[in-house]
Length: 208
Image (cartoon, rainbow, N blue to C red; front, side, top):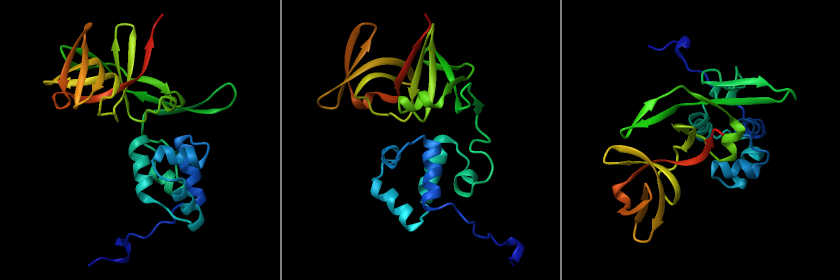
């Protein structure tokens, strides 16, 4: 039989304004409007959390899964925000705290991903291009930062899987669920279902 020592006691979670402040900090949102846009919820919902002192646990889990932030830090105020992920905190010359994220990088060989070393990015740079789940692909002196949350092609450069082979291609959506895909200067029209979108190129960096 369970004893008192086996009981899972309730925690005193951050709630209301305190919780929203933590969310704003980890998502670098300067206002409730910006925070609501990042979370995809109405600002009135956030106002309700503050007024009623609520703790939206689903939001906490969602932000944890996307960013790697510690739930103990986010919900209880314990420990560091990012104790176990490959992010680093350092002090700049202006004594401003910055977060650096390590992004896995690869190169393509015969349609397959081949691993390379990780690349470190300032989180604010990824925030500017609205990327929370990234990977990088190197091609010579060019590095492509891929947003892995995008799985539907509209217009741009995408990492796609066709018949089990990966490639970077310019794609334009056409009427009738068709996609125009560029291959070395030629354009091929295919059905949307023939292509699996792995992610969209959100940032291109080139060495000069």
